[in-house]
Image 1 (cartoon, rainbow, N blue to C red):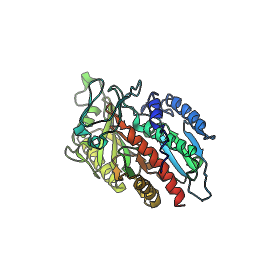
Image 2: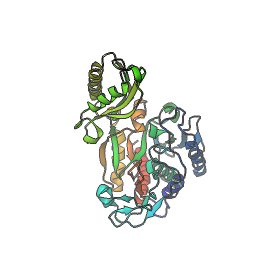
Image 3: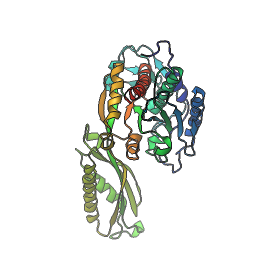
Image 4: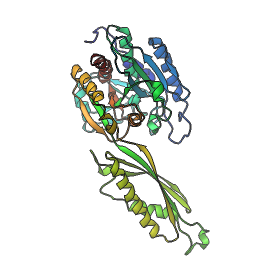
Amino acid sequence: MFDPDYKFTCVDRFLKYVKYDTQSDEESESFPSDPKQLELSKDLVKELQEIGLKDAHMDEWGYVMATLPSNTDKDVPVIGFISHVDTAPAVTGKNVNPQIVKNYQGGDITLKNGKVIAADNNPELKDMIGFDIITTDGTTLLGADDKAGIAEIMDAVNYLIQHPEVKHGTVKICFTPDEEVGRGTEHFDVEKFGAKYAYTIDGGTRGEVETETFSADAVNINFIGKNVHPGYAKGKMINSMKMAAKFIESLPKDRLSPETTEGREGYVHPIAINGNEEKTTVKFIIRDFIDEKLKEYEDFLKDLVDKTVEAYPGSHSQFEVIEQYRNMKNILDQHPEIEQNALEALKRLGIKPIQSAIRGGTDGSRLSYMGLPTPNLFAGGHNFHAVTEYVAIQDMEAATKMIVELIQVWEEKA
């Protein structure tokens, strides 16, 4: 039972955090990809210290870590909670101007600049009647991904500190940079973090418990042609850009692409092309829930590349596969108690669990293979990476309660 007089702080914290521009940069080779992320991280350290976590600090890479010491005599596994400070590169996170739609009564939500969050395209809204919904003004993203998660973790820890009668084991906290550019775990020190299991608070709809992700590879393809002066090119030039165009045109139109797949279907997806007459590079991402399928897709692409090269005698190609991450279910199935305890916490709160496979990845994918099994739990946000992003205040408070309840479940079952 939660203290009825406790004033949740997650929303106030969230509205403060979104004012920080923490957009990561996918073209940068530094870490963090943009140092402006560190401005929020530095202030998060101060907040953690202010609420009572004396060891709160930021390391040389920008990871914020802190410990809530155990207050029980039981031998409870050390549990961690993780969220990321950065926002997506696709849409600006500068000068975020949150708006609050109080007591939402259904229908479309029109943003300040005239853009619309359409009810028909956002079925989750039907479950938010009577809720207070935070949106953008339509010119930026909101940053609920994942500043909502940060605020909820902060609030949950604050609640436990303010209520020492609630028994818990040791809890570890980490706020990471660069999750949105796929580098959030690049310098994550699992041993230093010190948790046996962890949860990322980075999901969407209320009740989400995500223990399965895509497995993922990247493929870089170079088409190598032959460049000569265009005035004397007849019978000599091999234009690598035309090779790349022919190759892309040969991709299936009705399958194996993000726009034609759903559910548990995988895909191959060209994400960038750059070149000139001599050399053109095409970059792909490959996704499926079954590891072996990745090799099938890569062999399929390699066959199309070879056929393209055959059509341009004298040309050649280079084909590189880069492993990105693997389905965390392979690891989490070995530790069923992690998911079971999350489901128990939701049950106690009367929240219907949504167990779904993520058509994407999380930091938990990599962390699970680094020795820290880490599923993903809801933070409440919707329409991530878009100007139509939104989150309900009541869902943020529900996520905060879930974290507190989950920590208690681990203590009780120790």
